[in-house]
Image (cartoon, rainbow, N blue to C red; front, side, top):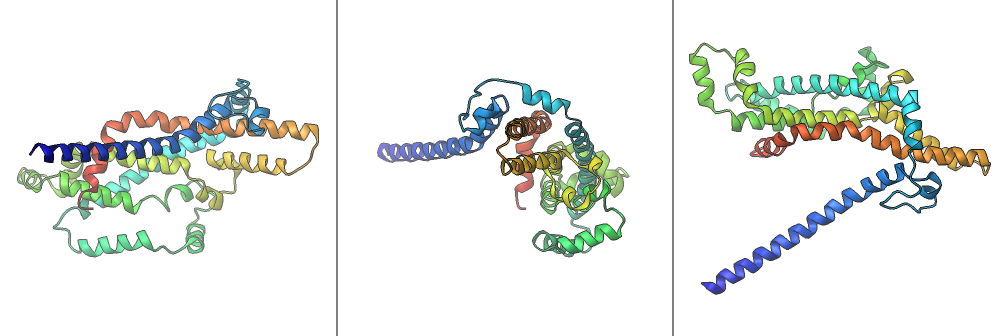
Length: 297
């Protein structure tokens, strides 16, 4: 018995050791690039270009951040991204809940057919060109709606929300509410949503991060530079820096390349701040919502 217990303890120790080592490797893979970007944003651009900066700032300076905060194009993109993220997250969460709630009810006629059609879109889509033609024909081209409507509902998030409602809201609660005179429409705001804070927080975080980081839709559908989100502005800065590096040996051009390099890293840090501020408020719901919504998905 003691020998068996010792073997079990050794196997548990080995398993924990492997898990911790792998976890530490994953943390390093994620953390090192972030530390480099943060260090480069506070470093002398010349040292960054020469590869002298790794994880700690060298030639500490805040000139790049001063340039970022004085750049009207970056501020306009930042404002646009905040508006798109707030409006897009609201639209996406509302539509996802309105779709997931009825699909979670077993008495919905044709529920399995609807789910099959929804799952089909998760693996197959019309493609970029048909989607572009549809957006253009609907009059959404070069407008904010082209960024908010076509990708308003994520199939994955819809399935997670549906599974959460099925597993976390007992059927007896629906029956009790029905006996008290509560209809299907009033059950959602009065019964379901107050018990679904976890999945709501998960949906808000997923959609907000996705919309904030998105740039491809804006690249395709938006031609008015005043409507560009921050990610497009950052992309233009990155491309400008790469183009100038391929240019000339002129001293003035070299200085522009250095400042473009500095602004690039500082703008990336600034663009990451809003998501870092949102996460602590939804963290306590995040793990619960993901785990409950993933069961029997």
